[in-house]
Image 1 (spheres, rainbow, N blue to C red):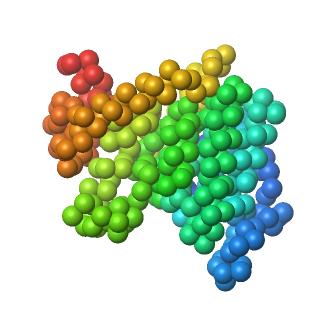
Image 2: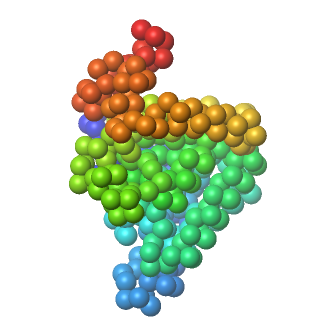
Length: 300
């Protein structure tokens, strides 16, 4: 039996080399090129020779894809000007080269405060490039399972993708717990309540709410299999964002607000969704959780 390898504990490059076919990842603009942020050094902040993101081409089950992995160990994967430009360039080149898909390994706390406006502009350009790729027939698959989650601008980028794959340990949200607490007070959201944080932003809640399409164990092989299946599902299929899909998303959000807007805790939401033994959901392993969610949908 093959030993489980944690996706969460791996670095960006470890994920790239273990998720894709052995030896197939070829990096564009590697650290040896020393393309760094022009802003950080002016602020006496540390720099990274890849600016916290690795991009390139790889094979996934023999299928040519483009891939990017954010390094959570450098500024929490936060996006700056160069970091964002590398992602934009990758997405645009994916369209030119007509690859089967782009796989983004997202781990980011959002935009760097050090580069404020430049980072915000970069994230908006990433969103545009991602939607352009989808419109050109290149599906985008996002994997979320790192310690820093997918927050802020990269949380929005994640939800722009065709498919989102998360682990229970992964987190996805617009604003981080500390940001919400700072803006609205601890009564609104206690960032020190780690169980609440994970209930609210973690993979299980996002899966039940429809914000991610797949949930897997914190295992490199499980992420690889899910990514491979997601890419294969779009072979010969349209990946573009349609008006119908946008309208369906809006209806889902309206319904979510109507049904759950007054409920203070995800456990209350799970109960309202008629999930069996809602309070025990955080203790379920992934397979048991998926089975419980499937039974609930079927009315079992």
